[in-house]
Length: 416
Picture 1 (tube, one colour):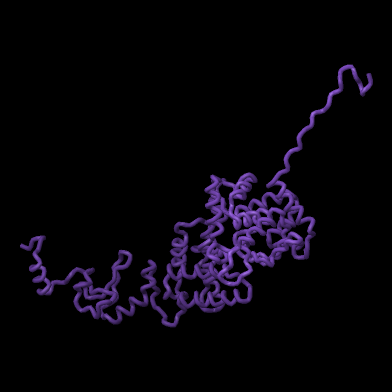
Picture 2 (picture 1 turned 180 degrees about the vertical axis):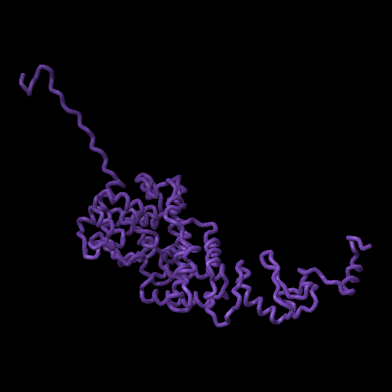
């Protein structure tokens, strides 16, 4: 009787006798065409592959089995069943995202979208290929595929971030439909399984913390910030500039003589005019005095220690990183980032009742009928909005009450 603890010689004897080796032992599988052949020969005579805990069979002919595995590999690795027949001429996901990115890249050149928007689209395309597989046939995508895609996109992120990812992902597939690259309706396939998180889910995630700063907190930050960050904080609370606005601010946007900032907001393309406080002008002058010589010619106001302009992208945001370190070092609690200063400006400036001026300073789009007809806004209204915020940040000291002189006893009106 054969015991469990067989000797090496007995195992060799079994192999010579023609016993079939274990199915997953690719090192000893007989008949393997090459060392790097992706499949192993199962005991039933078929070439097989174990994927995600599931054993797949691809037939007895090694060449056909290998070709079939290579054609279906992206589907199985993504946890999806391949379509019954794979058309070799079908539009693959890799080809689609390349066409999509080429289209977006041309819009960057013509100024229709920003470089940051293109980077966001490009990142999303790489994520789609990673999840669905580069060789996936776009034509054969099913609602189940979009359900799996949504589940994987949602892992470890907030509802708000998921909504942004899904919006960009949808634009890729709708691009294929609009261009006529697919015969079916991609919109119909995504309808039920690829819907964005509802607004109520996004609101619930915000919690109860107000995304704004107290005046005393901002004063503390200003007192301890370096020259670059101090100027940026003042720009944010003076005129609602965000991270990208500060990173892209150029010297030509500043008029120190008249005390104005003029620039277009990259996100909306709207022109902005911001009356600058004396404190903001002084901080900008100091930042320019300490500005390192950039490694390449640039008009950007703010240059890092590495002699490069600040670059605020979805992957890296040095302004937010520096601001977070400053906030934590000063013991200011909460999950409020640099952009919360823009929220603070809007919230405080609205109390000035100059709502249109605030919208203009913030660079918001105004799609109302009045907004379409309004061509300018007076400097006085713009100043009224920013001056209100300045008075909130540095409130005037209360006047000291002077003691009233009381007349001497027995006197009335100064007469004896």
